[in-house]
Length: 239
Image (cartoon, rainbow, N blue to C red; front, side):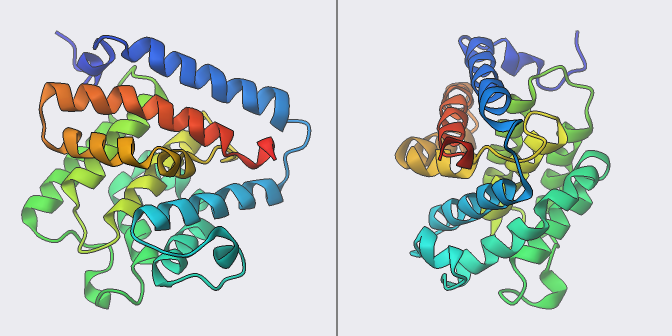
């Protein structure tokens, strides 16, 4: 019997190879294309692209150029505001994920919900389920970091613990897991853009995951590496 809460997911058919391939692709991108010419500006561009993609998935109609110019709609502005503070939360996500979740929501939802609701779960059940998600991030799991990111992302969307901006927080957390666990320390991959490029599959598989069936969870886990591969292609290192 194992105490690893994600061990059963790693054993599902096709999952280990899919995540190994996705990680190899990211490593090749960062090693061959990034290390010699990475700059803070490249990271900022990746975060900008991610904010735009996440906002569109949340219902924004703004273009990337509008967001780049600071003229996006409120959803885009919320996602962009979170992106500017996100990387500073990586240490907090590792040691106190509940605080990191609360801070991400407070930043993204500022001006959209009442001050006393910023960073606070909707109700007791949401708070309990959010603690379960946080426990995954502090568990002693041997699951690949990409799989941890995918599970936490889908869990946050499914739980929808906050009164607003749950998708934006979930996708920001996914990116932050990749930073905190050393997959993409400089945050140059754009997973949000990968999901936008595969929007129909992304949204369909999230719904399947939320249904809680083994097949639904399995399908999400097989989809997510495709999103990460597309996110690597969307990196500014490819420009």
